[in-house]
Amino acid sequence: MSSLNKIILGLILLTSLTLMVGASRHESATMDELAHIPAGYSYVKYFDYRLNPEHPPLVKMMAGLPLLSLDLQFPTDSPAWQTAVNGQWDAGRLFLYESGNDADQIIQLARIGPMILMLLLIFVVYVWSAEVMGGWWALLPALATALSPNFLAHGHYVTTDIGAALGIILSLLFFTRYLATPTKKNIVWAGIFFGIAQLLKFSAILLVFHFLIVSIVVALSRISKAGGHPLKQATRLVTRYLGRMVIIFVVGAITIYPFYWLTTLNYPPERQLTDTAITLQSFPAPQTPEGQVCHPLRCLADLTIWGADKPFIRPYSQYMLGLLMVMQRSVGGNMIYFLGEVTNAGGPLYFPLVYLMKESLPMLILIFLAMLFGLYSIVKAILARRPKFNEYLITNLYEFSALAFISLYSLYSITSSLNIGFRHLMPILPLIYILTIGTLKKYVHTNYYKQQLKLAFVAFMFVWLAFGSLTAYPHYLSYFNEIIGIDNGWKYVVDSNYDWGQDLKRLASFVEEHNIDKIAVNYFGGGSSKYYLGEKAEEWYSSKGNPLDSGIRWAAISINQIQNSTGELTPGFNRTAADEYRWLKNPTSPDFVVGKSIFVFQLERPA
Image (cartoon, rainbow, N blue to C red):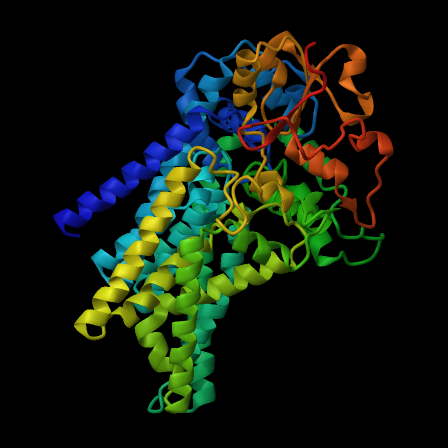
């Protein structure tokens, strides 16, 4: 990397960090942070994993470490800690807002860890890109990641989405390096980063299938005409590569162990056993009748329960508990508002449409052009009768690995019932950026004048991206591209796509500025209206009726609550008329909008 490259990359990292810190300072805790922050603190302070087992520990531990510098009160004497099974929400409420702690200080310090992971992600995108397209072009995928409004949003929250992207891309990078150069050192590094990916997000388990599929494909591509009978060669090569996969997975399992050992160190074994058994009671696999062999998934659940109090293996049991909880939740789905309907599954159109609405328009244009160029190359190769796959793999192994994972992850996402946000696509977005810029690079080098025009076009797209990111500041979570508009995204989808509770601090400022003495609040998120507004806030919901009847002239309602209360119900959901905000003339036409997500209604104007 040249000195100028280092300076530019440093400026990209600094710009991204500045935008994240600036946005974070104005925002309250998002919904998932209410669970993740106390969990992370309890891991590093008490070495106890009873909270939030459905997510791996590493992101939360990084969030918890800066909090050790503070003298904090943690609710270890509350039922949420003492008796509740995974009492994460109550523990979070007590820890942040009801124990005498400074909630804002805790939230901002906890977000340091995720922001570091975001900067590491940008750097890793640059490293991958530099290996396949050179240092100068590598700056563009790094810039696309650094200035993406969606990455800037989730890059400063204590959630696992940025960690998932970092872990998966690191793992893919070192796995592909191993395939290109299968040395012992590269096999070990591939295993270590596979393990790190598992510590960051459970969706990284998809790497197992990716590794196996790609390894078999690469093994078969390396059959030589001079190497003997093709079937014998295929058997020998596939066996060798699968054997190496076993080594990678074992090294990954060894990497996982210390983190789960540390975080279960003071988790009482009998408590871990009880919590695990209760949590997996409703696991979606039939109970095994006496005398019969258990269903494979039920066997896994039973094995996880059995190991929960065993001294050496209970760290692995805690890991398996989290993985099974994710599987359990994926089957059940999650209530969402999508395209006017309230449903527990957005269907196969959910992620494609949300992606098209929330990805920046200049990047969508570049991606579309890259796809056209790629298809043109494929057709051209077929017409020339030169589609030699083994030759393609030799020179395009990183590209193939990225494409294979994008395809696998996209298929998983589209078929999953758990459609709760654009953020779940983040592990594949940097890969898409890398492939896009890599493809465009191949088509820039024509004659001098055409080359300058193409470079100018690409530069213009990135200036557009930068302009869009700066104008969206600081409302990155609610970002929708120019086709929809940041002020209109709520009409199509909410939850972590638009309203995750980030605007409560802004509501407190609004109430102060307008001298409001009392306001009815129906808030969705990880904040506390009482903490920020004190006695001025009256917790409310639709069925309590019109606040005017109680002498309250103002109402503030999260748009997530409005859409879930007024959207058309799909089969399986029921709602009473009292829950539909019928006492508002038009719930989607507020008098004021605080931030982007809290609708404020002046129910009665002063005489």
